[in-house]
Image (cartoon, rainbow, N blue to C red; front, top):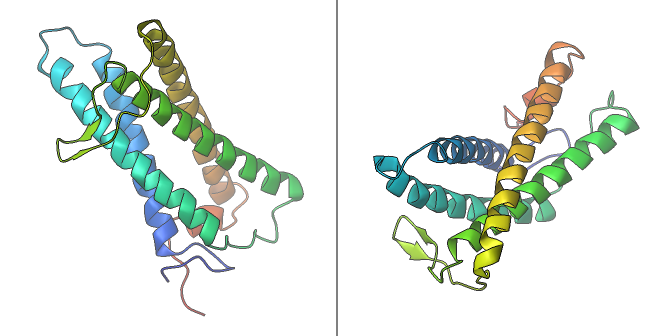
Length: 184
């Protein structure tokens, strides 16, 4: 099934979830790697362009994902989920969305600080809507770095909770985001 149903997630939500997750992990790993490079390393110059390009693709993907989430009915909670589990699940999702969009916004501000338009692999340019003052670029970089770590922490907790549901509580939480719901 393509669309979400009361009993589970559809293919669109599942693909958007896992492609977003993979992109975030890739961006974090590349960002971490880039901070260890010296000026004469090949990826010191290549890495930022790849990082910005994938970050912009993630922005488009997350915007589609947010729109899809707003227009698509979420599956019903599993009957065994308590009110606390449902609240915690919703809170973590909201925090993750907020963190991801904030990290992307700071990345955009860092990229456009000198008036350069961010591009997706040289194919598509995004407009420069805001330029930071030179003194604020370091602050944006610090916020970008700290919140990227926060995403990894929250995403790890999210993944551990899903594994706990699967292996300890033995409910269908993880299965619902791995397998699309079938027509009924």
